[in-house]
Image 1 (cartoon, rainbow, N blue to C red):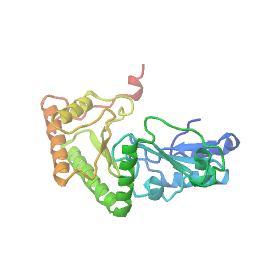
Image 2: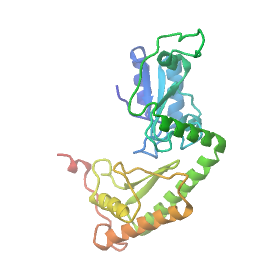
Image 3: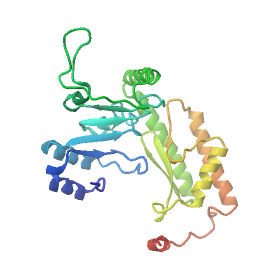
Image 4: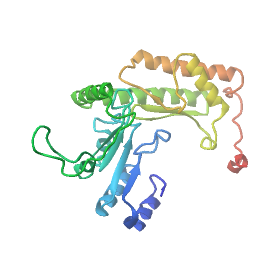
Length: 277
């Protein structure tokens, strides 16, 4: 069952099917929709799942601990039952983490017990393994990353998120001033350049592909998912370079007619269903 995230109607569907549901899984902030962070909705969802004894799972594989040292749970002030994490835990190394309350996690590892004595798991452990599990180097990296996050006490996220917000603001000021139909969406240290149009959810304009290829050509890597990240390794000079390269790339595309000049009229929007066969 899939519902519309952030919509009250989805809560009503959960209420109606509460006796059929074992868990509800949400991505608190979706990497492709960074301007949707429905705090009130999430609090209502937590209250509903708690009262109906439904497991609430936070998918934080992409968001990780970017918003706060405690991840989205700390940022929104919500305690999920289970949370999943990805490479953000391992400092970029391939790793997968499933964390949660003992009530649920004990069913996998057997609960608290000691090695070398007569204690034993309270329940039979569930075997789990895979490419993203238990690699010694990734485990060591994850420990170092988590300890570093803990030692910083929130200062790491505060500085990084502020830098990302300033980057997005600088790009949006440029887009608006120059009449470019682009916008930079941002949440914590993630940002994404979108085509600002009624059609942006239906297709990716050729200008966007060309823009990303130009950015890569000029040394600013943008992966195929078109979601960008700042890390603690990025300096103020790196951020200024990103802004400069975006501007240069847009101007190059505008010089050959892909983006309108400041004096050209804005394109007339077509009907949305005109693109649907």
